[in-house]
Length: 188
Image: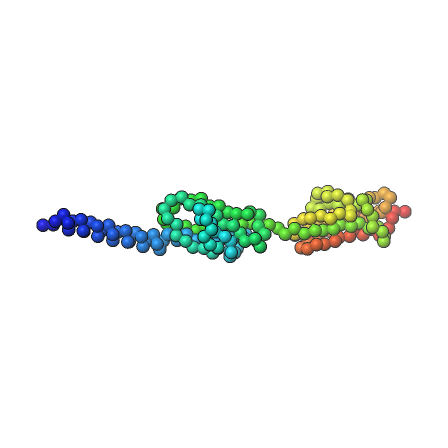
């Protein structure tokens, strides 16, 4: 006949074994992985905060306990991205999860100077400048725009300067650039 003491020992032993098994499963399956991406490409060195406390840098793995958590990822200063941080709020039962903070890169800004000349003279405030279909102003002008391909259209005043066609350039601008719309002569 079993005594109360042996029943208690058996019950406690069973609870301990179950706790060890559940804890082991949680330990191996409960890893939360945090990755920082820029335009879908993994980057290292982004700061990871869990519940507003800095805990490391990406790539980062941790085990989060049961409950609500806030994971914030802050990109490194040397990355030019549009967002300054990424927040993920979630509730976990101790299971693992993957958090991918995908940042969008900020396009590099470059300066483009547009000049207009007729013959060997630079003409000030006479030539209208359009970039990508939008009137920007008159030459000479310095424009800050995103690096990439742009269509620059310079409209020379027909009267009295020149009869030539307007000047158009499609350029891929990747660094500071000067474009000069050159018209050969004054109108006779």
